[in-house]
Image (cartoon, rainbow, N blue to C red; front, side, top):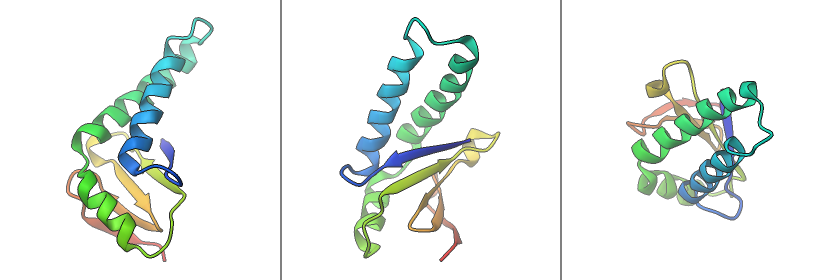
Length: 105
Protein backbone atom coordinates (compact mmCIF):
# COMPACT_ATOMS: atom_id res chain seq x y z
CA UNK A 1 0.00 0.00 0.00
CA UNK A 2 1.21 3.51 -0.73
CA UNK A 3 0.06 6.70 0.95
CA UNK A 4 0.84 9.98 -0.79
CA UNK A 5 1.47 13.12 1.24
CA UNK A 6 1.41 16.52 -0.41
CA UNK A 7 4.30 18.43 1.15
CA UNK A 8 4.31 21.34 -1.28
CA UNK A 9 2.99 23.72 1.40
CA UNK A 10 3.34 21.73 4.62
CA UNK A 11 6.10 19.91 6.43
CA UNK A 12 5.87 16.13 6.25
CA UNK A 13 4.60 15.81 9.84
CA UNK A 14 1.74 18.27 9.32
CA UNK A 15 0.86 16.68 5.98
CA UNK A 16 0.72 13.24 7.64
CA UNK A 17 -1.43 14.58 10.49
CA UNK A 18 -3.87 16.24 8.07
CA UNK A 19 -4.10 13.06 5.97
CA UNK A 20 -4.71 11.03 9.15
CA UNK A 21 -7.52 13.38 10.25
CA UNK A 22 -9.07 13.33 6.77
CA UNK A 23 -9.09 9.51 6.70
CA UNK A 24 -10.72 9.37 10.15
CA UNK A 25 -13.49 11.70 8.93
CA UNK A 26 -13.98 9.56 5.83
CA UNK A 27 -14.13 6.41 7.94
CA UNK A 28 -17.02 7.73 10.03
CA UNK A 29 -19.09 9.04 7.14
CA UNK A 30 -22.43 7.25 7.07
CA UNK A 31 -22.16 6.16 3.44
CA UNK A 32 -18.72 4.54 3.67
CA UNK A 33 -18.95 0.89 2.61
CA UNK A 34 -17.40 -1.91 4.69
CA UNK A 35 -14.82 -2.64 1.98
CA UNK A 36 -13.80 1.02 1.93
CA UNK A 37 -13.66 1.06 5.74
CA UNK A 38 -11.23 -1.86 5.68
CA UNK A 39 -8.89 0.04 3.34
CA UNK A 40 -9.26 3.21 5.42
CA UNK A 41 -8.46 1.28 8.62
CA UNK A 42 -5.18 0.07 7.11
CA UNK A 43 -4.25 3.58 5.99
CA UNK A 44 -5.20 5.08 9.37
CA UNK A 45 -3.13 2.49 11.23
CA UNK A 46 -0.16 3.09 8.94
CA UNK A 47 -0.32 6.86 9.40
CA UNK A 48 -0.70 6.47 13.18
CA UNK A 49 2.42 4.30 13.21
CA UNK A 50 4.28 6.82 11.04
CA UNK A 51 3.28 9.73 13.28
CA UNK A 52 4.40 7.84 16.39
CA UNK A 53 7.68 6.40 15.07
CA UNK A 54 9.16 8.76 12.49
CA UNK A 55 11.96 11.15 13.40
CA UNK A 56 10.39 14.27 11.93
CA UNK A 57 13.33 16.47 12.85
CA UNK A 58 15.59 14.36 10.63
CA UNK A 59 12.97 14.15 7.88
CA UNK A 60 12.52 17.93 7.84
CA UNK A 61 16.29 18.41 7.88
CA UNK A 62 16.69 16.07 4.92
CA UNK A 63 13.97 17.89 2.98
CA UNK A 64 15.54 21.30 3.62
CA UNK A 65 19.03 20.07 2.66
CA UNK A 66 17.91 18.22 -0.45
CA UNK A 67 18.23 21.33 -2.61
CA UNK A 68 14.91 20.92 -4.38
CA UNK A 69 11.33 21.33 -3.32
CA UNK A 70 9.71 17.92 -3.05
CA UNK A 71 5.98 18.06 -3.74
CA UNK A 72 5.02 14.55 -2.64
CA UNK A 73 6.27 12.13 -0.04
CA UNK A 74 5.23 8.51 -0.41
CA UNK A 75 4.77 6.20 2.54
CA UNK A 76 5.32 2.67 1.35
CA UNK A 77 3.59 0.21 3.67
CA UNK A 78 4.40 -3.48 3.20
CA UNK A 79 2.52 -6.31 5.00
CA UNK A 80 4.65 -5.78 8.11
CA UNK A 81 3.97 -2.20 9.19
CA UNK A 82 7.33 -2.12 10.99
CA UNK A 83 9.02 -2.32 7.57
CA UNK A 84 7.36 0.92 6.41
CA UNK A 85 9.55 3.36 4.54
CA UNK A 86 9.22 6.81 3.07
CA UNK A 87 10.34 7.99 -0.34
CA UNK A 88 11.59 11.59 -0.66
CA UNK A 89 13.51 13.06 -3.58
CA UNK A 90 13.89 9.58 -5.09
CA UNK A 91 15.56 8.32 -1.92
CA UNK A 92 13.97 5.69 0.30
CA UNK A 93 14.33 5.75 4.08
CA UNK A 94 13.36 3.39 6.87
CA UNK A 95 10.77 5.18 9.02
CA UNK A 96 12.04 3.97 12.38
CA UNK A 97 15.78 4.12 11.85
CA UNK A 98 15.80 6.90 9.22
CA UNK A 99 18.45 4.99 7.32
CA UNK A 100 18.90 5.42 3.62
CA UNK A 101 17.64 2.23 1.94
CA UNK A 102 17.94 3.15 -1.70
CA UNK A 103 18.70 5.91 -4.12
CA UNK A 104 16.65 6.01 -7.31
CA UNK A 105 18.42 9.06 -8.64
